[in-house]
Image (cartoon, rainbow, N blue to C red):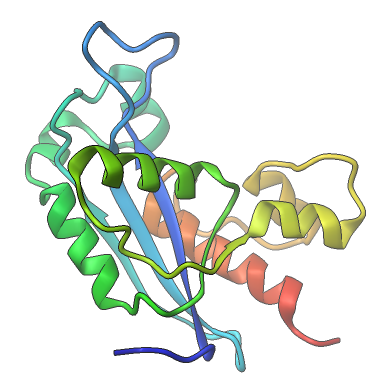
Length: 180
């Protein structure tokens, strides 16, 4: 089991969403977990993956499909939330993990609590959105696309797809933590 600080697990979640309020009886649920490992010594990004999750209490709205490109048929072929948590746990529950902002951490905690599952990642979480604002001396946090633009880093892949966003967050994190 991984225990070192040599790699950071970078996670990006996509969840069911609506333009306004969710329909009665529905709530945001994770539909994709994007993952990328960042080697903190070299900046190498590896093991990029998309874990598509089948929601149990909501459907993918047209707005959600426009944002993420994921359709209901895509998530219907996904794995259970429990299986997704098991896949995350296998990456190393003692490793530091990172996401862009606190939404991903809070959503994962909320959904684990609801499902009666143990939190699958380590206790040490890096909020890259906050770290970026601190390192750049900003008065407020900015979105991932704005942060990449400010750092003159290209957005690789499709924004709001978990695996592509995790890949981009890992690149941004490397730029923020490497010694200069």
